[in-house]
Length: 295
Ligand code: PMM
Image (tube, rainbow, N blue to C red):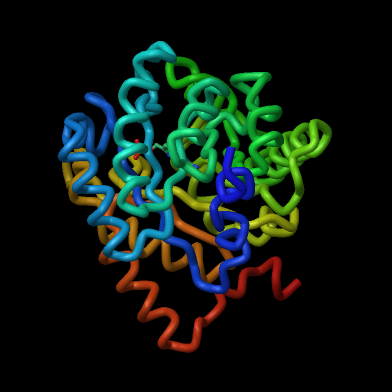
């Protein structure tokens, strides 16, 4: 293994970025809720990854299994067969990537193929071997708040205080990661919007990000095109706004998250997000002051 792979190919510096980090979504799946099927073909996926990088994505997040509520799981071989060729091609073109997987075997193969970050929607819960793979690679690990696989997750959307509960569960995932030797400066947290969350839970989490930031780790927020935005923008007859028409709501959410202190945002629409964050930066990087901040 080369030094640059072992050290995460510059990825640890990315975690200390002074600029908000835009992570571009590349789902190599036939069935993701927002872009399923569009990038299932290798050439189309590679073109889209290169384009998102050129548009300002600091990471392209390559995923091979849909995590939309109710989605069927795929086996590890299928997942690897979807993501590895794309990762190899994008690495050859100098595109920095995370792999969106909860499987240790897929993560290890993706790191060997050129990904430098592991984005684990299960926060290390789904595969007991993931922490070891990440610790040995020394790569950044995005730990997302998660309660169960897609088929069951919405049954588990019950909280006493969603922000306090997510914070406590993320703290447990941090402790578990540190216990197996993952370095603290490789950890990124993510509230997991839409994962075992009702719409009101997602709004609470985005409104109270400073409480999650107080754990002391960079925070990634992934609101892009999610169904709670579709519910917010429902038509008069209650029909949710289709996924492809949630871009403005996503961008607003992303800017608010960055203004609240988020390290990065995971989005499908990279260019308008980068543009919106340029406006935020040129405006003097105004910070969102919440009730908690002001005491
Ligand atoms: N959301 C999805 C998939 N992976 N990873 C992280 N870290 N955070 C998220 O919010 C997240 C994720 C589901 O959305 P998609 O189908 O658009 O990829």
